[in-house]
Length: 394
Image (cartoon, rainbow, N blue to C red; front, top):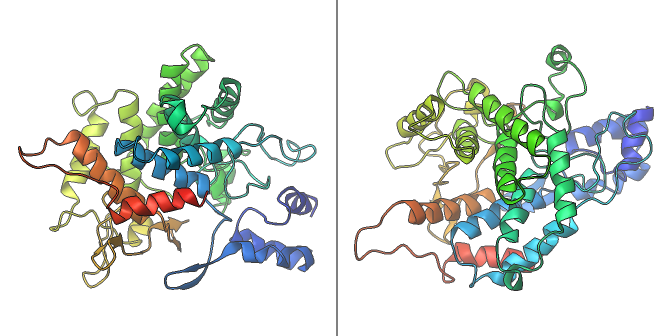
């Protein structure tokens, strides 16, 4: 009970997520908890829904910003970048958890970039971690400050990197929230303790962030950063499953995990020519698409750890190019895009808009177009306008 009450006070009665919230209400009482239940409720296109965590703004914004950066249109959308940049900087935590947090099995938060339980309950890993946010801030530091605003102070950036370094487990992987506090055999007994498991997507995000950080600040904790990158890359290779893909925790599923893994390995210099693991991953992607060119998967992939495609009458989606296009309003139709512990289905409302834009931008960058053809993503695009409108809400 002491630990439960500590989490209540530390999170201002928000708690770590909706599944924990109802259990705590039953054990501790409703008076202060009832006031925070509306924080979990949101109205989607198909009705009222319950969020697994309070929010994921920094995670979503970081992906959206990287998609927009890939469009190479900084002059046209500088105001959106500037507002988002300021938001990420302001989200950096100024304090550690309350009291003797180590005794309460909580990790340090100081100068991490919080999400979801931003009122102080937990450190950030997947919805809840600083990795993609730090990479976004590093990308902004390479852009003209008159367009994107002043870059994050170096000391604050170093503090965020120190947090990332502290999250790595002995096997090289990173958890979605806090480092594992118990032995692996005990984790196997408590499968609900998803928070301390290592995930490829977290590890890949850390790799991408620290490789860029090492390029910009090569002398900061050089040996530790180098060892972190080496161990994280090895973990990413070791986690490739028999299907030549990677399991995508929280996302559906194998295409999602493979995308993260390949991005991380590519960041450390692994290529198709020098890395057997990447060749296997590419083979998986080349053999996976359906006849219409999409990489759609069913949530059943999360359970069976092999590709399951949706029924043909269902709206289709994919995790790299997110097919399932709705021609009426130029937005991709909403579908189940995530899975928690294999049986709790999730929607990521922004993914359907972020990943198509990002995929098209990368295609334009890497695939030569026939002479006389030009792929342009401009301000007339509904997707582009959607991102600008979201920036105005920050």
